[in-house]
Length: 470
Image (cartoon, rainbow, N blue to C red; front, top):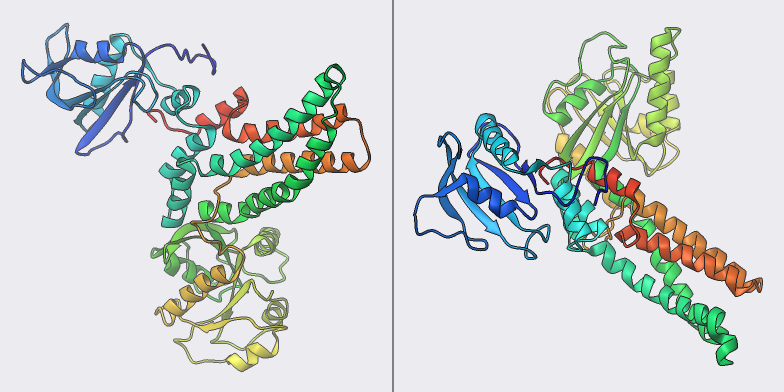
């Protein structure tokens, strides 16, 4: 059977499952019909009485059968189908880490009948063999890529079937309605029975909960994306107010060039960081001012675009110089609920007061006096950022959040649109044969989320995001 071009899923596969490099332990894994045979051919236990039992780790050497050269002292464990990650026979060899020793053992395994695994092929086999559904397979890579405690919790929920548990009750209700609709279409004349009142009553009872459940799942998408990718904080202001210094202090390193000359930053710089366990993407932008310089004009346009897209706007004002017209304009445009104002350079003599800034604001916007140079009130600024996150709709309880991604969201939208057409069709007295098509479309969309109706292109896209060896 071939799902991806060049990948024969009946062959035994092998791959290095740990990052290649200097370290204590490296792991090579195999899966397939010949996994145990190939492993026994190159592994020599230290004890002649040792037997390789299910999940029993044995100390020994990897030996080249032709040259009789010992390549490394290793631990080896066999795992017997179906009680394995892939539901196939599997083996793992734990050797000393390091590029040369790992590659030599892998080459020996390939020489004795295994082939190199494709990206994510171990997890692909787990999915195709029914051990996990498609959302759980996606959860594997979410766990690997988690950048914060929140994203890890969300990924673990996905890995343990959280999405499937949310989808299955919806499919059950749709299937029940479809059963009576199909019976009405296929057997009503032969049996002399009308099933329309039955499925109509079921729909009337189920519709509110179906739409509510779909809305709840889709509403969590924005939060899920932000937890995965980080909340975007865009630093804006006129030139030379200290935006790049603020970025550097957030990151704890000299990421952006800082000079006393205005216009040093001509393009935006974006970096990720954790603040109180929450992932943020901090964006330093070009200074906002009127300019005839074509490069600076492009930078200004980018800054305004990033400002509109931002989850939080950190508007920086230089407190060591009087407000100019461009800063006053920025203050008047400050969006309530999205903006935090940082009065920077408070280590220098002050030329701007809190009261003066507040005069130009159209609503209540948090203001904090800081010094990016000395770190004055830095904890207060970071607290305001976290507080802003908790004050917005992002503050869903991670424990109750169903982790969905862009693929899930689009399929949920498809299902909802199909159910909406179904509901409208009932009110328009459309024939059952047309109504059922909408219900079938909703069913197929929901089944595609968990992979009950897999699409080769979608599977390729998902599993090619995996590293080789997972």
